[in-house]
Length: 425
Image (cartoon, rainbow, N blue to C red; front, side):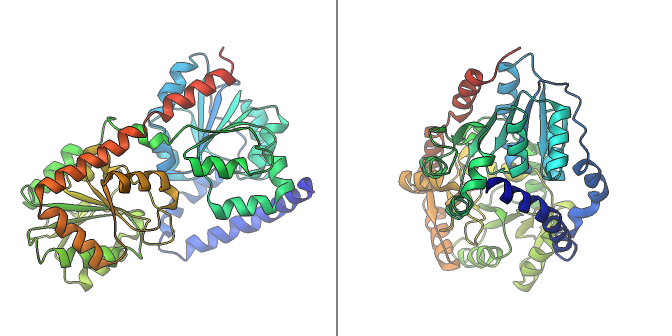
């Protein structure tokens, strides 16, 4: 039955891929297709990335997953000095980010059996490391067929995905047959992975790699400082809303405008999760008559809000903020990295849907470094409360940092397990 389901999946994959293409053509994110033909060449190619056989293959989805590897990849390289590191990603933006960590990077081939098998045969990796939620049936199956041990690192699994893979039990057991270890982010992820067919006794909790980014260098600090100075915001309180989604931005903007009644000098920075849809955010700001500037357009006199339509600056803005909001928590997304503001001892506000960062969210709430807000009035009230009491604000920021410190160590734990399982040259 597992082989039959895998065959059906392979037959449906081209149809699904075409559906995604049509979706992007008619969506606000159509600009992501500008590299379409370059992407197509890599996705249908079996060529490896020039590391030679025996390399460790690391696969991550996109920018967020790749950024989680800032400490992991150097640690992996130093732990296996005789082996190359080959990285693949599922997106072009992820590919560009991965090039900062390794010279051997390409897009993963389309998850079709002939393509994936040819790629693995040609690359001949000594191990495959999958990051977070990257579960591709042919990638896993072909790796097992070629005797390539698979490790799932920083792994997380939602309740819906667990239910789906349990329904597809025969396929799940087949594709997970080559998995040696699943290193899960949290107790909940550990429990869910342990319930999947084929993973019994293979799952261990090691924590979240993203929690280990505390203290790493942050790009864009100087540029952000100069921009804030040019806006005349040096002495103003600032709330940065990071990784925001369309449904969240009206709530955030309304909350900011309401909070300004008690803190007239409060400024807002919005960093959309997808910069290509910044025009939508601009439309919302205009509808609220909020004077704003755009990062790429330069400072504007009298701007009360800044729309960041450029990637790679979120942490720098968190560092310059008074309070932060993390997006993906007021819609169905499930939350982004709730602890990024804690890198800079900033209190963080987030919505009730933080299932993708449940451990971080619950710890932030417990330590009183994070605060829930579902509506604009709730968010405005929490902002006013923090901004009106400097001692409360400072204590909340330190509590956020404390929560982060208690969750560090995933990188070291993961490397120890890999060193015991992957042979060194």
